[in-house]
Length: 506
Length: 55
Image (tube, rainbow over all chains, first blue to last red; front, side):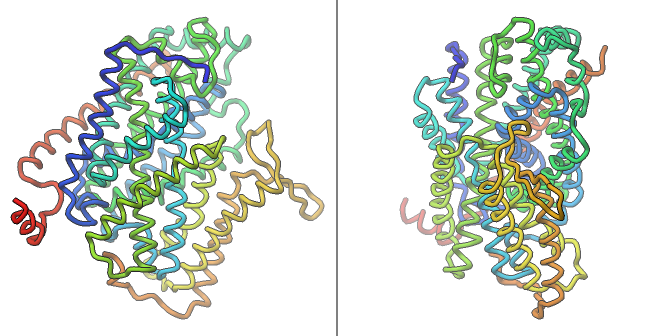
């Protein structure tokens, strides 16, 4: 860690007040939870403004803040056009279809799977959702910030970060998570917007940034302002764009859709959130470029790409605003971590433990167990944060897992009403998606090798005398055709048609 | 003004103004809901009963 941050007393007051406020909200909502629906779905009473706050802040964590700025640092506006814009398209699509999910009156994604395909599909989809929701990255990021601020060892910083998030998630459930998300949304978006405007202006706008890039690179930086970065091919863009499909079956998105007061609230919230998400990605990307320009102009020293955003912002923001911005960085991480702790605890208790072992579990007991599962989910995330070095690789695996396992049977269940679904179709599709993803990644990890050029794992395969390169990321479009075939085979050979179950959702 | 400057100012404006508007609407609604006790379901009669005994 070669970065050093010294805060003024005002910055400290802001950061500490923010953290204390989060814990207070958790304790405030402790008394509002009387049953599982209160705890896990905020009594299905989240309305439009709170939905916007919780949706935006949950989906954008440190991967967006530091990941997109890192791409901006190396590759310029490609970080926005090739990586972020496909997500914008998916947010709009989700806004159009989300009301349909809300009308189903389910509690989780796995409820829909169970209703249409039975318990095996429920359990497998819950496992995929659990894997997806185990987020080591946010815990790592928070640990990094705390270690930087408090000058304590990384492991202590990680534990401190996890304890703060767990306290309010454990005590307050989704009401606390959504309310803290709202405040976190406000802090992270406004602080980033102000930082962008101040940094860009102080660097002299486009002309100044262009000059800084030219000084840094020693050549014309035209490719920094080219949407394809001057090198991206259509195939690579499609491969990255496909990860945006995760938006369509994102467990935390779905939890908020099910927790909303009405289908109309969901649609409006997603439509209003979309420009905010898009502006946020654009700001991160431009600040990454601004960091290179600032280094080129000698305003900041040489910086590591993933610290570029912090370096440039701390250079240009005045006292007080630095505290707000750091609170915003913590907010981005905490709002994502808390939501996924809650989703994974629901997967463990409501979707897996209850149907398998205690179908008649009383409501109060389910709340108690879900709270304990929050602790388990947090412990797993902390353990993973110590284990993995390259967490972006883990995210690609997680996105592939949820897309491959859930998306085809889920959308067939919700949108192909006339299709006579069978238990076998859902069971086969989820199993092929789940096991296929794990198998593919194991094969690539064991038989492939790391490519320095593309910064990913690549495996060479010889077929019919020709050599093909398989990237780690390709699992996301190589496996779905097999899932589709498995689903169709299940429809043809499955005999038992699923009638709509009535007793499987709580 | 270059298109990139325009993009930066537009993104900055959305990020600053958007959340302020959303947060204002949210605060007004939360104040109303807290006044009307419209957060969470009502406690069951048993819960109310046991609380009464505790008191």
